[in-house]
Length: 249
Image 1 (cartoon, rainbow, N blue to C red):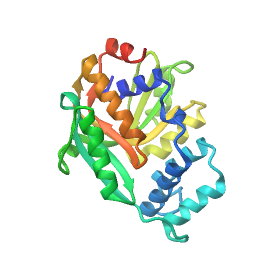
Image 2: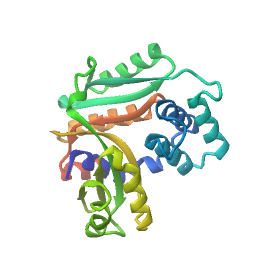
Image 3: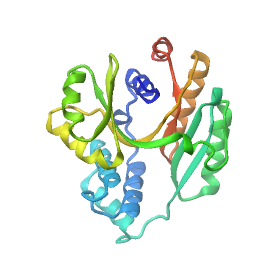
Image 4: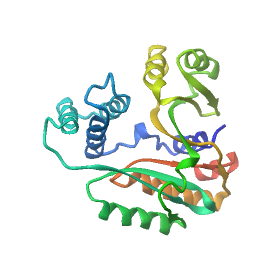
């Protein structure tokens, strides 16, 4: 099972999957605005926008709020001036960490990110110091409680998935970003409940952690994800099952 699956398992056991995190409407609206700014306001032609809208609807954001956020991104309504920023560095035990952020003030966000890295035993690095380790992928997390790996395989591999991996708690399905929308629709049409769906960065190689290092990394990732300007966080750690069990207590 991949390192990303291990992180997903930790989140599952701690009930911290993105679908259950209850992100603020302000953060969700900003992500919609940025997605529309990058790729246009039609979710049928903009996978990132469609994903951002799905997350907002999952958090019960009103339709008019979603529409206003889209119009701010396309320039139909005046809004704040946001920009994309990527922060890269290392955590405990040399774990690579990459944070995609959206900010209206780099001078505020950069030192705040730096502080999170440093107080958790890491350090912020130069641009592209870890980005080369990651490949963008679509990723779906599905509970293993009511569906088998074979059932998911039958749907996933016929609709663009490039890998399916499983643990006792979850199934993880990955695909190329271009196949994300088709695969998501196919899983939904098959009646397979998706707990988390995202387009993120996955590392080819991972760093295995002991309990002490894992606690530091998990704390740092949680803080980075919870930061108001953070859009997504990618890392390359792997955690043995016995350590996961200790973290989940």
